[in-house]
Image (cartoon, rainbow, N blue to C red):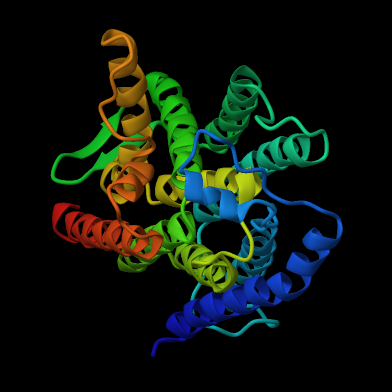
Length: 342
């Protein structure tokens, strides 16, 4: 195994261990301070059994991803120096993308934390209002894109089988809309035990393979850390969940998914890699639109779409398995697009 392969493997394993071990101590603490989930009546009735399950479990993978990403990037940064003797290094542009992406994820995680805190401590079930969230999310996206812009990352995007396309200033407008959309789509996917973590695991693995094929070693380690940390979280979140990630975790994951994919230089890969996230989001949009147009009729039994399948009799485990398989297939397709289309 090449030395950078060993470092990538280590990044995944260490992130897994940190995430899983934090859960051992965080879950009892969340129980102790009564940070339990309030299950709203708008969801499936059997979800009421989950009332009181600790929330904000996303802290597990947030800490793990942050620590491992910083350490692995610093190691690669000083590769070949008298302190670190491995025959690889990463470019300054890659470092900017990695830390800007991590910053975007942390900013959205902070928004989620405030939302969770408002729900649990302030006893406001719906948390922050939609306008409050959107303003904060667009602000986070704007700062992220400004960092990339002032760092000279440019407005070009690579589209498989087409080549590089320079969108000019429109790149920033479109990117901000895409980022906020994906962040909220990932947030909507968090509604079944283990679903969001599993989907993001497969997205991260796909990006890890894509980054490796591009010899983007820092990004490979970043993606590996995300994959490993998600698995560590799933130790506690897989059905029946002992903890929920909350908006703290789901908004962070939305930001980290955008950070990972944008760092490949091919944001368009968010379409195939995020196919499940997008289906979840558009199922809500279609449900609401159809309900208004037909004055009360429903297109799905319940939205987001995972609840529709629940109402059709699918178990939570089956939903996670099928949605994860779909993501894995589209992850392979995305990898092939990069290999043969660039």
